[in-house]
Length: 299
Image (cartoon, rainbow, N blue to C red; front, side, top):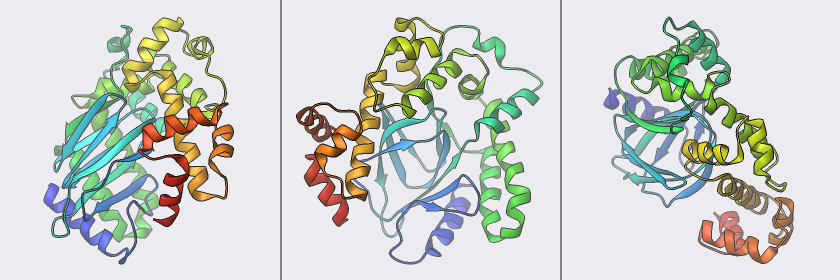
């Protein structure tokens, strides 16, 4: 199955033409194609809830203190929006890294969950939110769905009709699969994980403001200590670490894509001390803000 998918992805990415860099958006909403002809240095980015499939090569992704390595025939499932550090660890011009990401629509996931004959609610009664990330084998009906979704790119007129149905089917196989409870926890109404996710969305939208754990805990309907514990269990980082990564990623984006300088970027994302910003930026990206921004612009 992986070889068939790899052949499809190679043909689709070859068609993008020389010089174009991965990731490649597609006509299927939420489907992104990935390719690298060489091993890559680690890159920081925000990962949306998604199914990340490897057809050829291998990749390593880090969330907080947890590391996940997955290769051909495997998939990384991310159920919560999180900052991540990713690296292609196996690729070459003769055998490039080939993969794809299918972003989840929480509304569709909830709708499919509601249709299941055996609701997941009883498994959610305890207070443990579990992890928001796991690696699973890519096989069976789930692999068949992904193949059909990629093949749709050859018949654009069929995409609006068939793609939403395949997306629902993908949600179904994830929810009834061996890790179904982990996926369901995040979308199940009023579960511990779903309430933590609501607080994460507030933190994401207001990341430049002063972090108040008590306010986020109130949104999650938990005590501050319980919220801190559940947040770290779900995202592999503390709320402060999560906020810091969001701030630094946004500052990097501002400097690389505009005329804004390092000090202005620091204030824009919520730092009061440029020196503290510079220290934490260098620690995360491996170079001071000005030098790193100049390198990104050149690249």
